[in-house]
Image (cartoon, rainbow over all chains, first blue to last red):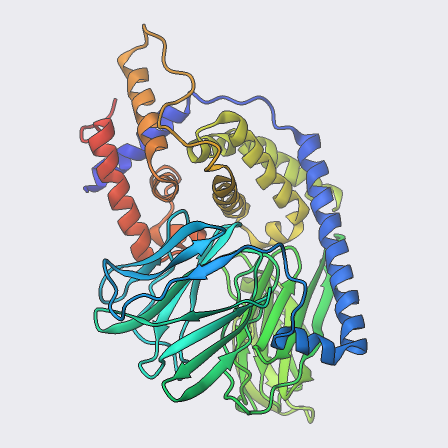
Length: 362
Length: 166
């Protein structure tokens, strides 16, 4: 395809679309709808924080039991079946079954670094050939509002995995080989969260993961626990919150630590979740975890020694950023136009500078 | 939201409305849905306008909302209605060759799968880079390249796009 053809196509699409006309923008309806979205977001945010705080205070054991595998009243039942496939993928098929009686198939495309596809769903990103680090499996997720496609490479020592869903059902997944590497793949309904993922060798349980699940977000599996090892306690705290100058818009960054790892949630207009394994970072570490080209809300993790971070803005002003310490890690958050920050310096409680850099911290 | 921001949003909304409806039309193949999609995206933008304004690229935000919302809607409605590649208002019998080209191109575009159509529109009509398209669609750059390649091959075959302009 020559660049001439591509440019020509753009111009031709432009000419074709010139025939599409529209009346004036329905300004009043758009603004009314926008205000309603804003109100609903505030109500949901306030309600969720209140409910979570109450439940954490009153029923901590009950909460954990529900996640661990109790029989919570899950969403409307959607019957999932998973077929056991042969050890070698035929035509790239690494998973199949039915969902509410309708067949689903997960197929790999590509040989060395495949993507997973399922009918009616967007493909995953490149899966790679092995899980990251020592994880038994690395799951890549793609999906629509109706279903999720999960697929990923499996470590050679894994004989099978089980997945427990929020409705209590447990499904067994056997790795399928594709061009010398093992993969699993399945399709889940969007509203049925994964409660637990367990990896087994031929001799017994290897590790398990409690995915971090939030409504309208893909499940996050970043942390694997060995059977019998102590389960990390659940901690939830607000890292920072504030009002954008001159507006009624509130931003808020919350950290949730637990068996799933450490997750930072942006509960402002742009909702987002960033999860990392819960690690012991170097004492002077400052690591930014939020990402995205249009995010003004910056959040990250620090080592134990970082008490506060001083920012120098491009207009010459300086501002001090508090670091919240919970669960052996420090957390910071701010709302700023990222290219307005010239540099940052991290300090100990004694006021000693221990790390620095340019741009936003981390 | 303060008056300045409100006025700025209003200007953005009115100046972008037609382009957003056209984008919606290519994505959905239906003018009514296109207007709904544009309205949804602008309402979402209005609800977070101060942040979007500070981030500095409201165009990208609104387009992303449209693409993602359409993907969601597409999943919901795909059983009930299928895009046929036939536009609802065909050109009149005495249309010129130029409008025939337009009709043919729109039909060819609408016959593409949603993913390929989104890539074509974002990449070639809105002149976004492959990286920007990948970011917006939540896929890899390689995936954008392959989708674009397949889409262009189909368009060439189906709409005689091998030649030059109109």
